[in-house]
Image (tube, rainbow, N blue to C red):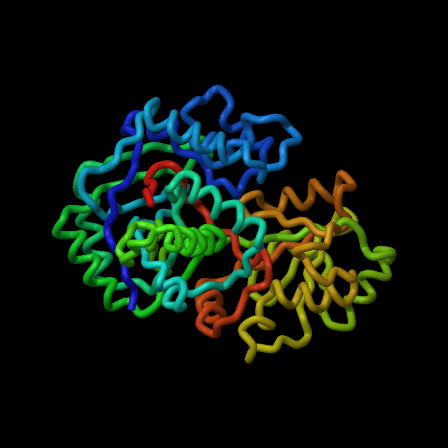
Length: 408
């Protein structure tokens, strides 16, 4: 069963929350982070992506980067200021993007649950990214961005969350991207009730933040080795999360661009697809149903539908797996999308216009628009202890860094 616990959050003053908060560190590159933080000395990107203040060609894993992160964190504690709550609490965190809203519970989860698979994963992590966030956490002695978790919703938890939203909000602002962020502190009584209720939740699932979770586990191992009086109750044994009921979440597709057709002409490429797909012209710019893949090539949209799908295998049944096996691999020779430089990924929030633009400008030979993976598919893969294909899910809206930090 899941173990959560309240924590003494490090948070900004309410009137500075919008300025302090920042997009997750891993959704922007250095140039984008520099642009977002420009003219905002309080931006948390100066802590999560401190290389934005250093020379352009600096190694992002250089000692100077982590040293700057520590310096900027200490500066921000005074300038914002950032204040540690007097008592441990849980928090309600609502995200609203247009007509979509989802409300979760900010809490610390046990790293024992992560290590023993009570918290299920669906994504492989990269060592270099783990190394980076592990060092970042240990340098700051803090987890500054939450891991996005989900669980099968429960009426008792929904009622406790709804009741907590009747109080005055700690933070309530709309970020530059149009997403509204509202956070409430739970009462002591509600906090105790939520902790008890999660004791009956059998499994939690990582939706977004696999590298943060893996890094928290590695940081715990390092800090445990350094602590001769380790008891198991230290804050580093827990990691910062926001837990959302699965039925509230919104998954967007993670689309693909390929830079060339592997030596094939457009006609030869389309002829090769006929072996495994029904090819429909004209097609749509986005799939209407699962089992369809929409392709932009030669200034037009074409829809392809696989002739056969292995519905008994939760991985091979995914549209992203069909695209990988029967198009990217067998026709275009792209074996490993994690390392092949001929493929790029486009988050669904950018729409299919980004695919059209890249192809029309000659930066790509073809774009592929996918039907979004469902929560049921993600949970089925996680429950089978399998791994989703890389870049399968794009969760939106996203949590922001710097609003609730967990000191370890």
